[in-house]
Amino acid sequence: MSETKPRDYTKEPEFVKKIVDSLHPERMYLKVKEIIKETPSTKTFRMVPTKGKLPPFRAGQYVNLFVTIDGVLTSRPYSISSIPTQTEYIDLTVRRKEGGFVSNYLLDKVKVGDEFETTGPAGTFYYEPLTDGKELVFLAGGSGITPFMSIIHEVVDKKLDLNIWLIYGSRIPEDIIFYKKLEEICNKNDNINFAVVISEPPEGYDGICGFLEKEIILSQIGTADGKTFYMCGPEAMYTFCDAELASLNLPRRRFKREAYGPPDDVTQEPGWPSGISADTEFTVEVIGKKTFKARAGEPLMNSLEREGIVIPAICRSGVCTTCRTKLVLGKVFMPESVTLLEADRKFGYIHPCMAYPIENIKIRI
Ligand SMILES: Cc1cc2nc3c(=O)[nH]c(=O)nc-3n(C[C@H](O)[C@H](O)[C@H](O)COP(=O)(O)OP(=O)(O)OC[C@H]3O[C@@H](n4cnc5c(N)ncnc54)[C@H](O)[C@@H]3O)c2cc1C
Image (tube, rainbow, N blue to C red; front, side, top):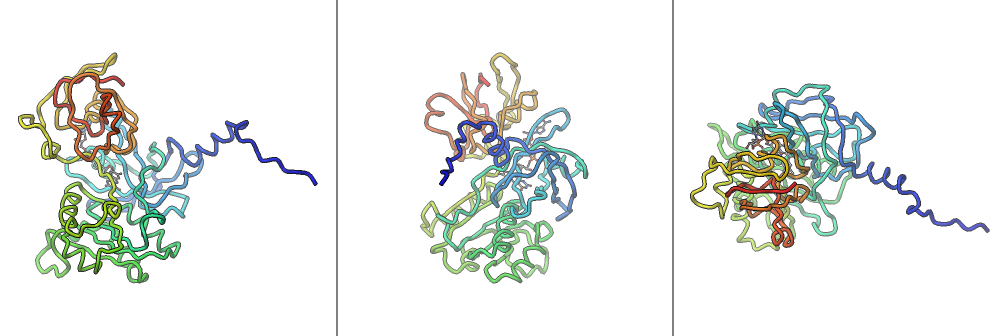
């Protein structure tokens, strides 16, 4: 009988690279196939690949979308709001941010047929059966609903044995993204529960009003015991919910949160040095490249991009470490949420996506 030899992949590096690249591409090349108006301030961009096939992703992951606006090459991460089992397109659902650079561009200028580059799917904000249990509480704020939409769709589509309580905070009812779809899913599936909490209710509004307070959350979920909490939304929501849920004394591993980008006003972050305003300017020297002035209140990465210097980035939230850069001289401020390795701290590496100059600085890229 002839013996089949195991295939020696070490002798086929090109074949292996082709497989790995198709599963974890560094870049995806996409075209807008359809634009769906979700609310007055939100649109979904349905993207299809212009090269090859879309890679697999896990519900809850995001891509970093590159755009060139007024000659500035920059990027912003957007969670994939579509379901992973559908492989023809991905949906990115973007909400307008007042004064925002990229969101306003996407909502006002982008049309069907426009092409974009993104990173491959990234992030760890997904359901992990080994650690997360079967009872999940999703706390969403504003556009933070997007990863949950993908996860909920997948749970329903695959008939996963999970119980979900989605509690969605919104300023006004008109801003609730995917309201009809969520209501429909909730009506058809006993394991999906959905409640909206409105912070600025209009006259006569008879739904739940307020913020995502402990009492409101408990009124929906009964008990927090044995449940895993996922949070996605603006930073202010995390600070609020952390304080609200602290008295429940749940273990840290029962909380998962998605990064959501730089704070709106970094000068309000704990530890920001007194006497430095957001508009204070410092000199940034990029060794061998350029010297320019940068505002203390703007992430260094944005100031660099404005000067035509682009550092590889994925999360733009101080988490993924892709933009790690050597700080040779001077000081930057990094909010507490930035996950810096001890070695980075010791040897002077920073994450420019969430680093703010608070002295004249010198960096090496
Ligand atoms: C993991 C993750 C997932 C996310 N998912 C979603 C999602 O599903 N939906 C969603 O809506 N949002 C999502 N976000 C938030 C999103 O990435 C953006 O932060 C959001 O769209 C706001 O971006 P913006 O450019 O409009 O606003 P900002 O980033 O606040 O833009 C203003 C900033 O742009 C810079 N800027 C302004 N003008 C210029 C210029 N001329 N040149 C260079 N820089 C300039 C300045 O630094 C200014 O502070 C997600 C964020 C993360 C981290």
